[in-house]
Image (tube, rainbow, N blue to C red; front, side, top):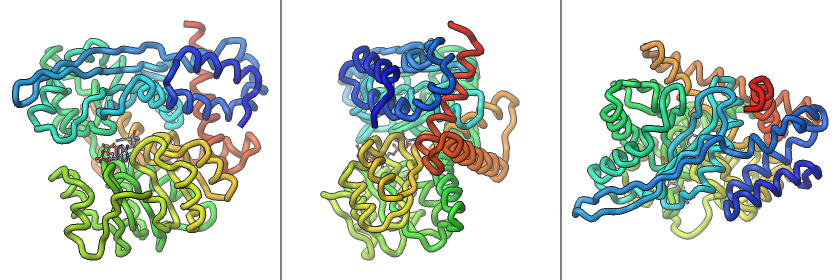
Length: 447
Ligand code: NAP
């Protein structure tokens, strides 16, 4: 899609300033493509330089992480924290440990996070971090030493009123525990609100583990309600088998749908009878095994090593693994097989041409910055509980999460209508998120 000349100029500056960061360019362009009508209506945003300011992180921290493996060998990784925008509150966003991590990935995630956090309506700014460390195949002690070394470098840049990291790919409650322990030791403070995604016994929130997956399904449920549909009887494909995917599966099951396929980076499984939640949790959360083992243990299931999970026929697709996992080929396969709704549990899993294909073929589409905002929203609820030294019940927290997702859906839908694109959740999410941040930036002056 064409950008207006002024937005094209802003985009060109982003590309020139951030060479080689393709994912960051993609994320910026996708937001700018929605903003033409906003800028036309509110020229003061241009005068105050809101677009170039929002595209430039407040701070980018890059550091070295040395750690020792079990054999005594020393390894060096690179750590990142991008503190993108704090107009609405302290920086908030996860840490990703994956070998593909580099500055461009962290910046794309941090940029998305600004608008996602704004959509939640909560007082949180946007940031993201991580490392090119690969946790796969590492012992618990190696993970601990890496996390401690990572936190030794990061600790000086975070705090409950400054920047509050959480988990993402490769970072779950085990890693958050090791990092929180090291932060506590370095600072001599039990500052619960410095990290979210903590264990329940040491400051965590009930329903945080489940929140992103549940939230994505709640969002999709709201989309279905508009056409008087529900998950009941629907066939669903969920990519990934990590934190987001597992709890999306659980909630789809509760709402009467059937998840027939899931994946990891080595391939996908198909189980037409419905993937068994308990078995998958034991395999992935306890034994940290590969998804192929599920098919080995279940005669009714099969494992496909080479191929695309999107070839599996479904009514609803929930991409919950990683960025750009649905390309145009994946989108065409979904459309051909009759998929009518795609809601992104992962961040930016659909490529721009896939999104265009969904729009052209009437597939309802929810972008990650709206559909997966339940995770960060519940992190903000964890911060609230930490600040008041309180601990809420699962039911209460889930109810808050549900209300937040219904609110985000409403905000996105109404904004899409207001800007002449009813039901276009990309437009709705980008504009609604942008307006909240831009207005706060205007109010705070040029700083
Ligand atoms: P996770 O627990 O580490 O699980 C990631 C899953 O995706 C694993 O099954 C992994 O398979 C698969 N995967 C990763 N890279 C892949 C690749 N290149 N190709 C195919 N599969 C790949 O991470 P997560 O927390 O569920 O996060 C999943 C997505 O949701 C990410 O995009 C993340 O940014 C987004 N998200 C997460 C949260 C949250 O609260 N956790 C909140 C909002 C958005 P392997 O094990 O084989 O690598």
